[in-house]
Length: 141
Picture 1 (cartoon, one colour):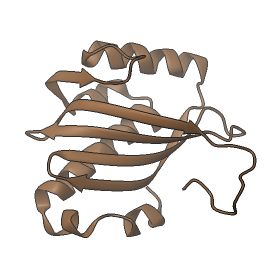
Picture 2 (spheres, one colour; picture 1 turned 90 degrees about the vertical axis):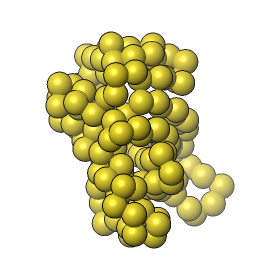
Picture 3 (cartoon, one colour; picture 1 turned 30 degrees about the horizontal axis):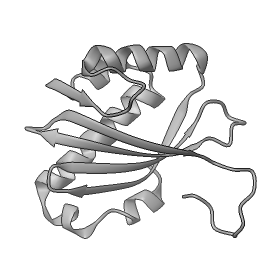
């Protein structure tokens, strides 16, 4: 996670050790799953049930395994940089810049994870391609 992401964390999570632990859990999961391509290391963070709201991924650990394996075979240089993490109650929101290759403009992705007893049990996702140009000078991150 870059320094900007550390600055952009919400203050409540810094005061509540449970929220800080949930953020660390998500950060470790994303690092292992996407950047290190180590599904076994990432899978320790799943609860016994894993509900998936992305319509392209099946429920459960096997659903995410199939999805990430397919992505990795298609895009072996897949990487994601966490730009922001926000924790509230049992939810952690991660704002990512995902790139399928070093030259790819990438996607702005917002992943929302529900954490229960220190494990990931539910996931939502929204994504938007990073355009070549914008009508303003702001970037997406």
